Length: 255
Image 1: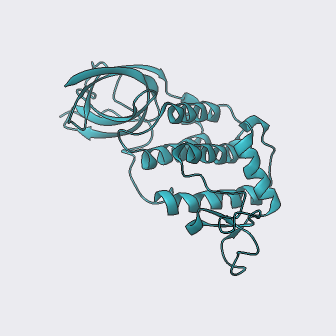
Image 2 (image 1 turned 60 degrees about the vertical axis):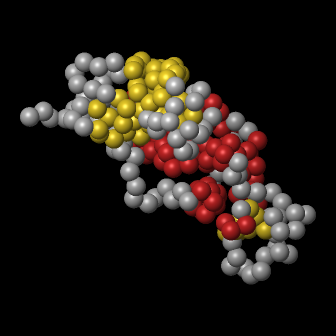
Image 3 (image 1 turned 90 degrees about the horizontal axis):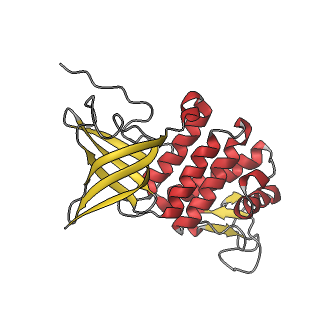
């Protein structure tokens, strides 16, 4: 059965398909992650406003056939390419972190309106936030995204006894353990009081209300989230993998 959908979407992955077309993935506002065939995307005249590039938000129209993995992109109206991100390497690198997390954790057919809005707000904020606040933005995004996905680490009470505040994060446990339950001083990543306080603020406050933290505190919180992503979502953000190209795409030569 054929059906047509129209929704806001952010392009998150793309690959060449034949000499003139692309296969692209979008995180949409209403239908989660969808894969589409964009016929003639490399041609001078098409209905997509040029080839599909990554990190571009717009309105898309897709024809979907039941039983087929790819829909057919019929039109796209660009709203924003987040231009400031492409002019500043630290901002673009941070956007690439968000993009990797989205691509590696949301399969085709899954995703939600909340994940789309969180992603879009983070990209918009990255265009204006002071550079020194970017590490906090990434932490804030990861904490909220993991909560949406149902994989948030337990960072308050000990996951073993559930009665005392935790002081060390253990990836295999999915959360923190207290001093009484800790089997050795080397078990887990020690979470100091400032690190626990930063996580509390990231969960409870808007980003603009999160207080600045020393670099070593931010780095420890980053280590905790990175270990959690690797262990529970098999999502190593530093490994070699493919987005189908990140950045502005050049038109192909013909000949």
